Length: 614
Image (cartoon, rainbow, N blue to C red; front, top):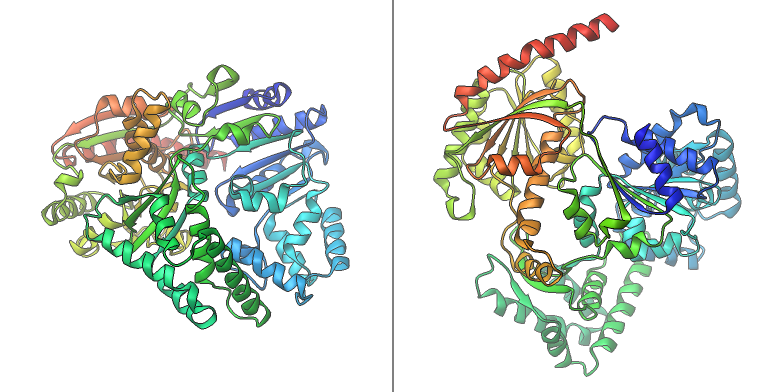
């Protein structure tokens, strides 16, 4: 009730509210109650609910359906973009799918663009459902042989609750496509999993170009307009020259250097940019009309150069190696003024279970503390974690070696041998994950081991792990901290009573991060190093811990395998709602069995209560 009343108050006063409360508490349905109350009082016209993923957006609509006492007050849907809904363009990059769609529309060649069918499908869905998930809309539209995106836009007209992913608001291109005609001054925004918002927005505003894509673009241009390929060859040679330096931290490249390289062949670099765009649109149109796979390296090159040649002082252009070791160049903003987006709405609610320290979040988002309301769930404590710090290990850059990875692998083997059922292992990066695999981690661990692979469907990996644990087998789930398995999935301590967090997932001191520290210092941050390095690391740790604590009765043991964890670090960044105790040992196995046995009576009591209710 307190959350519902706070959301309603946020709408009434048109302010920004930050809510930190545990996962599984019911923040979603409580906030929907507050939105329903605001709509009943005519305080707003609609609410936009922003989430990280399409699945999370669908869950918002499913939760809204549970408010049956609203008497049909809530009407709305969850949205999906063309890349995940269009039968012709599914899986295509969102920008390319938009351009391909426009080409098909202009030539009247899209078999799904029949306005009469769109209207009929939308009217039927409105009649059958006050609230429809994006999956239901897509299925209905394809059955009626009409465009799912057009049906969604049609349903938006009469919706007062719309669940959607971050890019709809924070990606300027997507925003203009959907909301340029929609007034937001009478709309409230609910931003779920708000601890991700700054990283997500910076990701949307960034453009990355791999050298392999440049080569593909040169091949594409040599067939159509060969004179446009020469500047790209010059760029590759220049990048390779920079790459002769140490790229462990990346190399900062100025906008002027890129302009100078292009100017050797074309007097006006922006005229060159326009010509690239013309070729790219021609390629996309041709492929769309012929029914070919929509891909265009030249458009990727154009999109990067368009961003790089128009950046301001808040951006950095830097050359570095990506996670796969490929040379790439990136234009990336150092900061983002969230206040510009918040000012469009009549009230904004930021929600998450892991926002501590909240005052820093407010400052990073450029929100004024005096105009923001903060509520935190504090009592009674939610769940319980026994933290065990292994002070014999450090994964800092200077300590990493083949010997270290072997030592970690054998420690994990000992923990696995001492644990029954499900075990979780969270590592800082895919690089360290590969190093542990090279140290024979899979072969050492007893039972079955499920490893999250980059680009693989994480849900299916988790489901296989879950099925084996529930069948009574010993299984280990290995994931990267900050990945889908460490943030977006409910695991619970029933499936995973023990988890090991290998290392402190500190961002590396790249050229980008170091420049970001300088930028925050100029903005008045007293400890910018903490904001850039320590806080993101601890937030990822808390998210990983949060996968195990999904109810007040969840109990777990978490081994923090890095001596850099300290009592002050845990105390400062663990959310206030979490009950925990902290121990530091040279050998965590000494405490593991004792900690597990201390949790068994409470788990048994929980099971007995469940049986009694049944």
